[in-house]
Length: 149
Length: 371
Image (cartoon, rainbow over all chains, first blue to last red; front, side, top):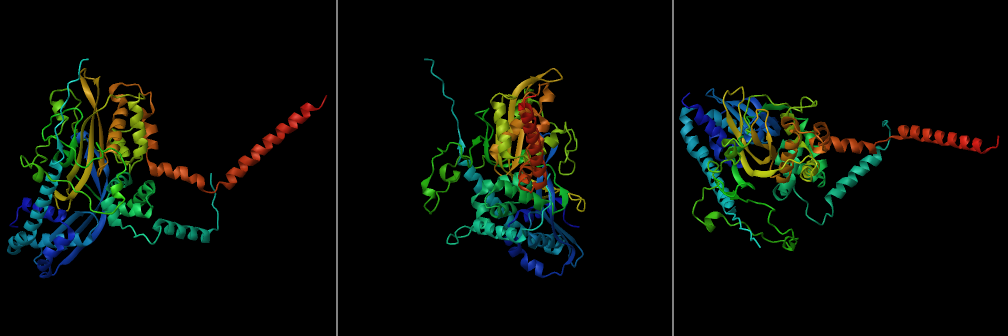
């Protein structure tokens, strides 16, 4: 495999966080070109979420989240996996297919440039916008000296 | 005890139709969509997700619509749905220290790294009804910092927004929270037995009814198990949700999650090792659930009585009492079961009372007779 694990983690993360419609739209031309074998059809289940006492201490169970997983195999033989928070089978299927294609060195850079990078930029822009909205509510509190009389 | 009864099918189906009609309301008014509930009643959705114990905004909004706004009923619906899905994974613990903060305040330190950010809050509102909301129209949206000031747009960067309480930990003034690797209890698999582990307590408290925990937290402030709380830090925002599936063998991010966290700094106590330090209570919940988190932190601290050699004198300190009554699905289930037919049971009681009264009147009439 030519890709490193951190690269794969990156694209999987970007696809998981991307809005489903946008991902499917950007990915459609790549996905159409391959014939995928379904290894595990998109399946919805739960994942238990853990927190830490005091943010840093022992773990405890906070509750569950819905999750969708999917595994496909591309004609080149690569297995594509997707694990997405939420209940969107089309999202998971699309992400799994792209994960398989991204492992093919001939396609990786094109998909990265046309799908992953634009999604990452959209995410960054959203985060930046959110941050600036939040920063506008920043306060500076002053303590007042109480009068003695 | 209630007994099985037969019949009433038609009446029940008519009652359900009537409920659906009632829920829809006047058909001349546009129907409320699940999406609208999700977008415009986000805090109701947050509560239903937290106490319903599934992070899924759409499902929670659907439950709110179906329950016609009865949030306890919506929580019940979500819990019931939960049982239809299998649990495939356990995520890695979320790191609230790396939160993309949308609100962060501290009542203990005025100046903090990253500053105090109010975010979207009801605090400092006048609690006057806003009649502008009655008239449909565009809402005034917040001004972003870039329009207002350009000095440092990256202030709420998670890297700069460091946690507040470690400042006290570093000076050995506060009990530390360190991961000793103990696996957490899971009350969804094993019913808690008392006394139970703090991990089981926190899991119960997250799902616990906000009103019940709020009242208990309030009771500690009023003197029933006082624990001298300060809101050390309250933060709300997005955290990354990561998973390490066995079939993949490495960690991946599967999305983000909105959570609220409250770290309470409580009165100092002499620890078993002899040191005197501030103690702490912890609250964590899905979405923006600030009141719930604060109440949870107060109760979490109250329930640590044994760790600090405190006498358990008040309701909020009674572990079994708090944990076995805080779940509103269980509580409303048992209270509601009183509506089921208890005809036979009640007949028995009625019979007994009649017999007792007859006996009494026989006794009293026989006493009235002169010997």
